[in-house]
Length: 110
Image 1 (cartoon, rainbow, N blue to C red):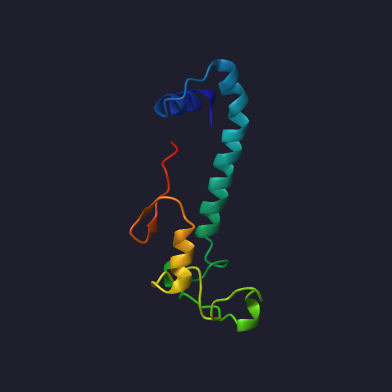
Image 2: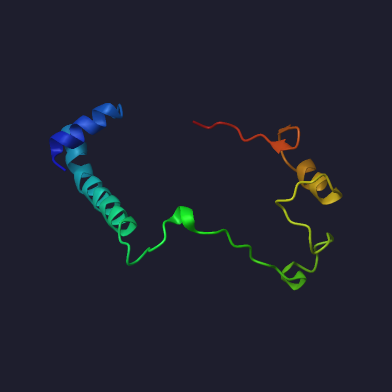
C-alpha cells in the first residue's frame, strides 16, 4: 500500500489524518493487509481445508452434570441459553437491567 492509497482510504472513512499520522499508520495498515492476504490464501488452500466451511456439520458437545457448580440450585439440564420461562430464567432476567419482553436491552454506545 502506498501513502496515497492510505490517504484516499482515510478520506473515504472520514478520518481526518495529517501527513505525520498517515506516515505513522502506514506500517500498521500494510501489516493488516498482509494478514488479510494470508487469510485469503489459507481459505483457498484445498490441502489445508479440503471441505468448505459451509459443508461442515455442527457438533454438539455433551456436558455431564458434574460439570456444573455445586452451588447451582438449578437442574443439571438448565443452561443460561435456555430462556424458556422456567424459574431460573426468570431469576436471571430479574437481575438484568432494562428489558423488552424476554430480551435484555443493550444501550447503543456509539
